[in-house]
Image: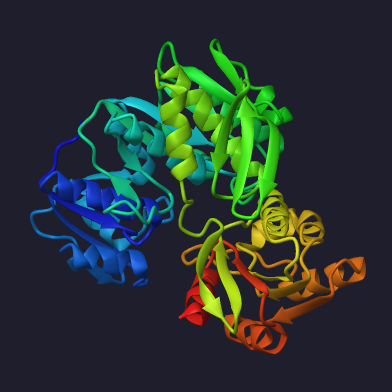
Length: 440
């Protein structure tokens, strides 16, 4: 494993990079970082003594820095990465660091278009219950973990997400790989679904010798993946009631406190993996039944105007459809008000028709304008206003409103929300801030 005493992280406010910052601090390193915004993750890092600078400047890199880790969103032309080059400081990407860490442990890596974070958190929770004491790097947060998005165990196991964006997961060679599903996404990087599938196949092909791959039996693209040791995961007999769902895996019943058929499938993946690594069903059942979900995944953040407010990370059409269905399933007699902020112009354009069809079960829909990712220059195509008009044409919702920004979206909410409603602020951008603002 790479050694360092003074680590500087560029783009430290990301969910993954902030977790890595915590890992290095736990190793005894002095950790600094920089980012363009001060978000909740940055505030958490500052509370534990990590110096974070706003903006990217050469002077942010400490004189005694011996390792730089950068987010994949940070270009080689970044001034701090230029300092690394000039001073011959080792400079690696966040995925590259995960790959280096994976070499030293029995590694479980979870990939796929949807469900990576929740499946990772479920598997990690089972391993913890089984006293495997894993290291975990999460792309989300768990409220009952001290470090929220990281866990620094002393065991032989490492659990992490393996993100397909920019083919980042090719840096990670696990012992056990999970593919939740394969769909069109990140089309600012990939040409089409064929290239995405081929890249997943490449990931599988270069895994550690003797590795096992776990495949969603309902997903045709995943099923096409070739592997020497390939196992499928699935569930049956799913039943739901408000606040709980049960399902069977191989005639053994499991329960979850979180809703959604997709979460039953995520849990089925966790069951399959944890059985193979030697954990008994009773331990798996206990961990999954006590699992309360993750940050921004069906997360209840408070009450506003006598309506329950949730934050949900769904930003791909399939995930949106699944989340809305899950909310309606758990709360069948309550009105569902969804505020959605599309994430990235390229994704919105390439999947525009699918987005239009994904909100049919929402009673009221408010569409905020497309979230533009800092540091990415994208060609602009359809707007949220265009999407709202197409959705109105379907005549599936009681009301569809357009908001040019989150302030206007909040104004719309004040006009339409009624006591007893379920409000879901949905998307991968800063829509979460609206949920937390009104819930306060």
